[in-house]
Length: 190
Image (cartoon, rainbow, N blue to C red; front, side):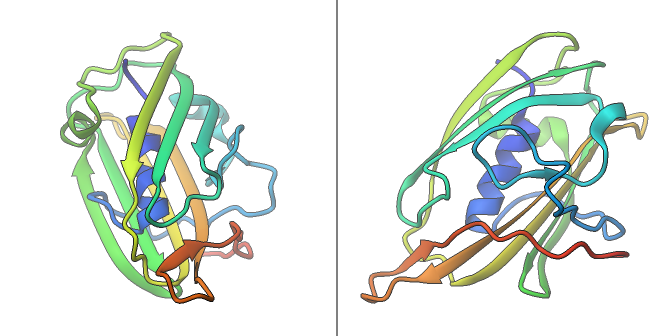
């Protein structure tokens, strides 16, 4: 099982608004639907992925949308056009509304060990990754936006993904549940 951990951590952070990754402040989320990642998910490519090293075939979330206090099952399929090895970085920004709550950079190879993968991630292998993530029962209500920008050691783009998820308080007062996925208006110069 190799590859696609880049999306796993993104998906988990999208659902919980927590991550170990960093940011790329000049990327604005694309939200017109033309760059949607195939499958049942709120993900979009930040820009045309034709030159990205990672080609995502599909990413599915169960349940979609994610629900607080439930297990989120993530299934992703894709291929790499080049090996991805030591020195690759993930830049992640997580915003709660307009407030940046996480902006970090992490070594991709260190990060993927948390989802049972290891570098190098090999090119041309059709890969499927399945991961379960326990979501906390209490996720503060609000709009969470995530941008994950991934580069290899040569600074070539592996992928850039963005998503926005809105969490709402249950009317009966029993914690927080995930509302529908809401995509932002396109913005320039984040």
